Length: 174
Image (cartoon, rainbow, N blue to C red; front, side, top):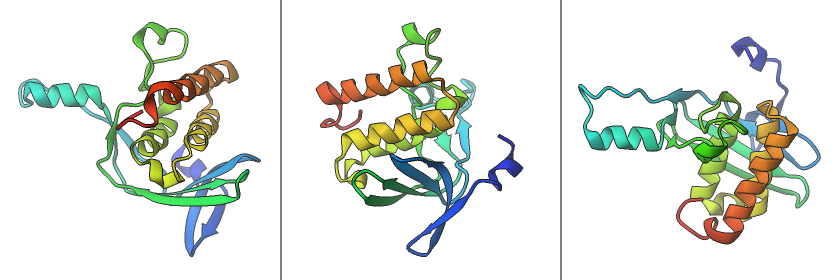
């Protein structure tokens, strides 16, 4: 989507703040105060230490701008707001390399916004009152907005949902 196209997205207000309605359906609404500007880290072994290179490979994506997020759970009639600060780095969609041909690599453009929000929610369960399923549904709905097809979206949603059920949500990261 071109930058000018984002101006055509509808807006909504919550507690005096304007949000871009990035996603809105009968399950949830996701709004951003501005368009998330996501960058890829660059590696240069001439100026970076091995530890810096390892860290950049582990979390190759970062948010360039600070974004306020508003999530509305339309099923439970709850609204959550939080801020993702510029410089936040994350690993993208956690997809095992063996499945890249089927699903895509973790840094695919279609996954970047969904993975950004989901990673923040996994690191900060309290942002959504520890509602793991809602966090996963937000991920799935944002994948749809990112133009991820129904089959890949289904596989990705059920992968993160089942992973978190058995070993993720109660841990430091999911």
